[in-house]
Length: 330
Image (cartoon, rainbow, N blue to C red):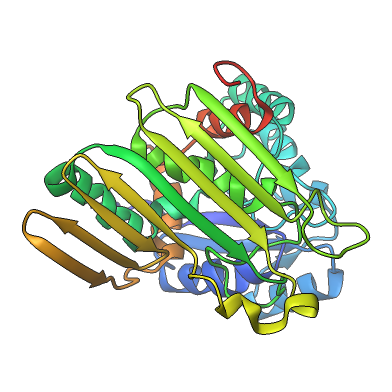
């Protein structure tokens, strides 16, 4: 039984991930975590949250990273600083949990060098790995369906809602589709298939009537793997101002997974339909424990040197290699 004292956390970047995913989970796992300081680019919001949690408000990144009582940093929103807090924490040799995507291979390599040279523990939040539907799919691939042959799927991102529930069809910050969700879907396909792609084809376009779209509002990617498996994933941003409720017209977002002995259809995070030689099955899976608890539990094991099978900086490097077209892709 683990009798270690709670990990003392510094929280950087308050927003919907904090409010709907991590704060509730941390409140349910007070035996493992204690928030001792918070920083947000809106100082009053940071002070208000610190007052609620009875912890210290920080007025800058340096102040929170250099806090004498912090064991680890949780970076939960990019705000004005992007991934810079990861490098600051690495200099202080503090473990880092980061939900902020590292968008380019060059940036990932620079951050990776800082992490490895300082010997810190780093966990990126690749939440789709822990969705109930994904976890059940992985079980089925091993027991019923066999190896993946093809993935076909689409995600539809509706207008960013700062206070909405984070999920597979929403963004946690108004960023390009490459950063969210394509970045995370590349990792999801890697996780499901269990291989790195050997060839990649990507395309993006602006399909909305916007003067300055964020790097386009349509992105499609096709990846081929050493086993011969193929993953084709498409994402587009729906603009209610122009298309109204037309989002109801096409089929909902989902992922078909064709395997050697059957197939599955996932509506993430919690619905899976699958078929094999025993017939058709449908499962709506409980979100228990919560996604936040699962992710934070992984981070706790990483920091405490307990058995850990979660993602790390090497996964970030693999994702950004695909996005940027580095080694082994064309």
